[in-house]
Image (cartoon, rainbow, N blue to C red):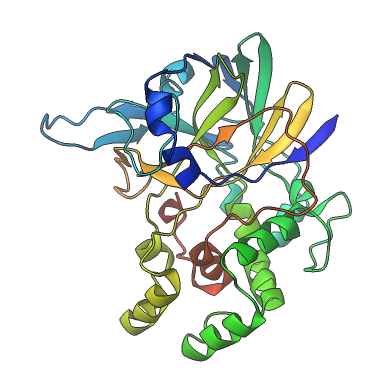
Length: 334
């Protein structure tokens, strides 16, 4: 089986072709016969769509209901004229909720995660083929030898280095940031170690799947991932107001956006996908009134070759947060 590592970032190039796409909308096939492995309510959680009783409201709800119908929960998408545009909002009633895989991920310490082999998967049919979307294990991140060092050559270090490269983060910048905000590690290696030791890789191993569609014309896949539209205040909950003001200089006022990775087995290939550009979902989780406000929906082309040099695509805030400032409550992550 061929294994691909696909890095995805939706940006201006997509927005520039909206007018052309909108005049020729693409039809799509949705997931059928969905099933989830594992123990309901433990290994996975189902959130259904609940309309807001206030007819003038622009935000509806998701609600935990592990008995909800999967096909209904996974319906819809967040596309405009067949394309996902982060600057837009999802249409009312779409998507219909989400399924969180590996829901108990943050209960594991690093040592337990390294020995945890259970995988939670969402399976079904898309078009005339089967597809499996799964949570990640330590082996996915660190390889068969479970090498967790910063110098290892594996998905963990590729993904981490891509993130730092995109934001131009080097040892010099981290050293400067550390002088202003001592909680920030002062080197790339120390940042990686802090991210790893504080459960960063577990946190990004439990995707919330909102939908799976296939473009009937191009044959490409779209997977919607639910998360936060802006998690700055939640992630940096432990900083003082002065530290938050300093941090805003580094972030340049941009929202912190990051979806968990999802592992996809489709058409004889295995690939890892993630996104860092969210649209406003028009939803909020009814229990915590925090989660599911963002929708990440990178287009996932099939048969994509592995690139030797990973494309940079992540967010500074998420790395620094997991490096020492991540809010403790699980619900504040999504």
